[in-house]
Amino acid sequence: MTAPDCQLYLISPLDVSGDFAARLARALDAGPVAAFQFRVKGIDEHAAVKLAEPLQAICAQHDVAFIVNDSISLAKRLGADGVHLGQDDGEVADARQRLGKEAQIGVACKDSRHLAMEAGEAGADYVSFGAFYPSTTKVTTVQADIELLSWWSNLFEIPVVAIGGITPANCAPLVAAGADFLAVCNGVWGGDEAQAVADFARAMTGVAR
Image: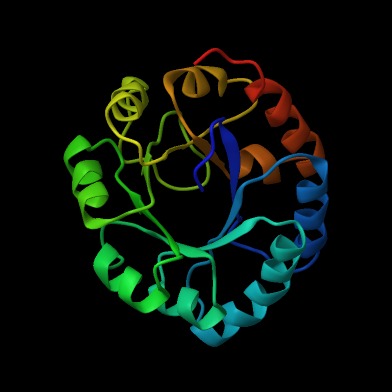
């Protein structure tokens, strides 16, 4: 997931049933997307696999990385491109051993420089900071300072992901501060997903870094 410019990293809503596969395809057709994170809660792995497989196929057709949230086991079962780990979801070393050297392993670090540096030393492929703005997707326990992005991007080569309440209207300061990826859920799925992806592409283009 290394890239010179800021890119969009879509996170699924918790409910990916019904017409969501069609919505995902529509979003990926609307503009550049680097990765898609499959994030569901409260269902067993067999049910998660059934929901994930058609979405994974759509991502493959669009050359978009398919990342599994929280579960190293599910990522391995699906042959996913990677896994995104919270602080209680397992170790980078275990994920690397189970998923292989090519897997993209990300670690959520909230607003902690210490956790981010630990993740980098452990071999994470990216770290994420946030929430930067109030979020409707999950309970916001910390408010991250945009300066974290500048600090990280100036010192480390590992990509940094900004997350939390990001919209086309408020994303420019995050891009300018050095975010490599914007992780977005409700900012895309809360309305017309194709319009939102196109709006993000416009908002991220030409921002001085």
